[in-house]
Length: 322
Picture 1: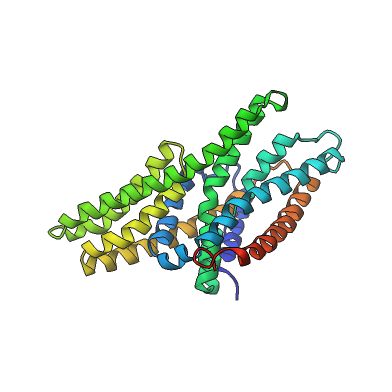
Picture 2 (picture 1 turned 90 degrees about the vertical axis):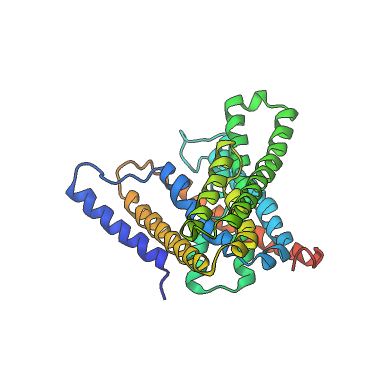
């Protein structure tokens, strides 16, 4: 009746209030490095390794449409709406962000959060097709978000008056490099794992650990080269599911399944609890107009974009999109 993620966030908020009123210093620290380099890979590995591959590739057309076109639509509409409201003075006379700054902010919130999607869909037992489409979008739009953020961050540093057509084409080209590069790295590490596990029957206890090691190596390799680490570990998991599972023993398969599920569940629990804890603090620069219009535009334009894009899927060949 109530999603587990919401309960964990509320529990974290309660802990945050207790700590806030009982101590002068905040003893908890939830850093981006902890999230991106340790907790998130475990969740994505679990989703990628146990994802129904056939269903995913059958609906790849819909997934790409939502991930690429949908994310760009969200970024342009939310950023444009916030820029217009800022120029109209709804955020205050002293708060008028530039067009590049609003696009930079909207690129951060335009993508779907895969952690929340996984937690919610696991709770409500969503239909497999809906799960694959939304989850696939949440994974693939990572590449779009990374490119958009890096692109507009560099544009802000360059300045509106110094931009040229070449800068725009470089941003478009970087999307394909980030997405395809991360995917290729994941597939390569998946094949490396498949090759090594052909010779591990004498050391069955190492087989589940080897799968985790190869998955994290694919994630960190993509992160090192500024490519899409989420795409890398996702396709590494897909590749290992098809080849590694045939090489390892039944006991290793069982151990890998429960280890992956347990560690992903523990990571989700830590994320949502800390999300509630770090919310309770004094370091908030609050602007009611900016927050209110952001929520309004994010809800409105996302709904419009999803409706129109789903309508377009009717005209996509069924072999790529159903």
